[in-house]
Image (tube, rainbow, N blue to C red; front, side):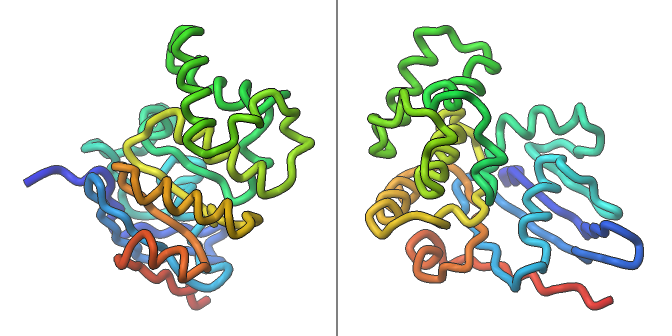
Length: 215
């Protein structure tokens, strides 16, 4: 039996003891599997994605990623390479002067050569249909354009898992259709947070609903 890429076992999370966000969450994601995460605003969907990459720590339970229990900050370094998170707010993800530099940043951190970085950056821009964005100033982009660039920064890293937090927010109909087409053709496992049922139905029938905690 293949080892799952990701397991959450009885995970709780609370900002404060009297304010629980997630309670007894169990999740298992295997290679190539796609899982939609749904639920009301404030139910903890985004928090769950942040827990997976170690941006916050569970108050109880275990996170097992790529066959290893992850507890310390150092444990999550590998996870952040192999599990690419596309943030709900693209401004949290983009910080370089130009689009090409934003995509290249993570690749250089992986030790890629300049030639490899240039090739992968261009290929990623081409795949998303935004090759003309390369030299544009990132903070001058529209919200929808920034979201496509944020997705590009993650896809360029070729992670094993894609963690997508409302990936179609701000996209027009044409751009959304392009994103659906791209995601449908990718081999990676995916956890997808979205309120867009039509979007989710085009990618997976596997749905996990997260209910708000009672306090």
